[in-house]
Length: 133
Image 1 (cartoon, rainbow, N blue to C red):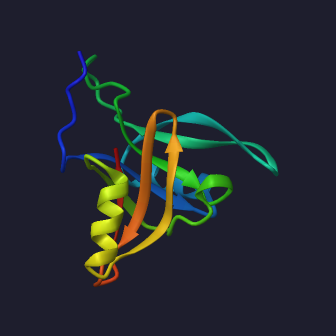
Image 2: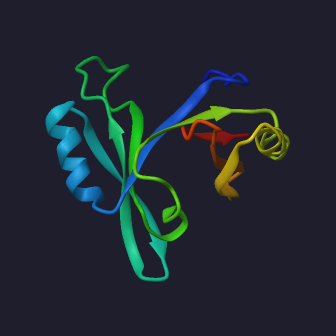
Image 3: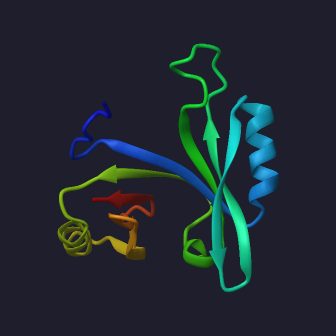
């Protein structure tokens, strides 16, 4: 049974870059992750983003996805090229309103990915964070 995600919990992390295959190879070599393809499609055609998976030897940990490496194209072309954490919030819409009131900005979204809604915000110091509901 999957663990229920709590408000404020970091629920995902990924990296969105122009040369995703190069960075996939970099992280498999440097960190030891294994990868699996995630089929994607945009107006330029089909491609794959990558799930970065643990390479552990125990059955429980083998292949567990811990992050993603994505192409900066299609729906992800506005996402900055840095490791992005996504934090669960009760309401993306309400969190956006609070962020703007406190001097933050929305860099991408809100948009849907399956049943989830997410956005990327920039705080007043310039740091970015993904919010997901």
